[in-house]
View (cartoon, rainbow over the protein chains, first blue to last red):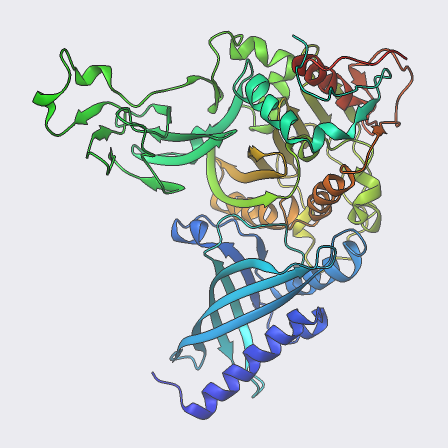
Length: 163
Length: 394
């Protein structure tokens, strides 16, 4: 089922809010893009795994509790140990389809460039697809599930922040 | 044989000191390829559990030498050089896949999954006496231990059993005793670090670098750290300790133990030159790694379940493996960060010195405390001798 233009605009605003939170390292803001449902999920994995039904991911936050823990990892546990870097996410929506249950399934291209604090040179961090499920339980669009599936099979570095 | 590298590497007299230049010199790396990676050592390249079905393959490398590892139609896993037996063209480009035949596109020579040459166009016009049987895909020497496959490029390397020295029981524990493993996925990353910095982690850093241990009141388990006599393969064997305060986490399943034998709950091995494997809580992780250059180390973290696991246990291993010990893991992302930062610091002049547990500047212990950093020293001594770097007089 096609999605009306005004609804598409709201989906894009949610996506922009998500990207802006990550690019400004605002982890509570990242968490606020997800539904408060216990089943809310974020997965980041390589296409190599995804295509072969190999379920291990780079980040597997398959419930709201793990999304909350992801924020703790970054803001408390890992604080002061890593070489920090700034990301810029570029996303292009390719399709959005309304499901019978009112959830919208959305697929986008995503590329993430990054600039490490210490070298200052910008490089590609990862490219791939977003597979999103957006719900409207409270009226506002929120991610019920977001999967970043990366063409990038071998990352150029470790990841601190979700993509 | 003494190294011919100029200017010579000046190796300190004290056994706890290392010259930083060995981490960053291109000429040292080129010599390491010859003496270590293409020399008389074994290198772990795959586990049979990664390739469960006939025709399953993966590509890999040792140093800069490309390999193709395939389960044949007869069920046997073989390691081939990833090059056509004719003119040497790269045979397979995919990282993983399933094929019953491998075709070289250059002259359409065709090989079956057992590596035999099955077809070659215009064969009647070939050199006198040409026989297909003489042109299978070429294979390095291989050996395996509980499904873990090793290769060596030297005929003089001792048998795998002898080469492993006393590390075999610990490695068996990592692979859940019998090595009947099934792949559940990969995490792959290319670190900007030298291979020796990648596998030089020690027992001293864990409670200090990894704040999660302190925040979760997660004490180190009781156990031993040892280094084998000879190559200095390192083993950590610990009973499992569990975090006593998980209130920091909303989902403590990330650090739950559902296995049956906590005495075998934690194992880490670091085998010379750079194979690391770990079993911690219910994560089984074999880290297949490649040293393509002095400044780069590519690591394929392969995660496994056991063949007899039920669906719940597999799910638990998947959820724990994804978030605990890899390049983005709760208690390992910081290690990845250190790999990069140590490599940058190693470009400064001088030496570094191990301290924790050092009692003697002239002799090394092979059985040390779990949180000592002296367990790495026998392996460094093997490296030094193999590379022909002479110690400067004290």
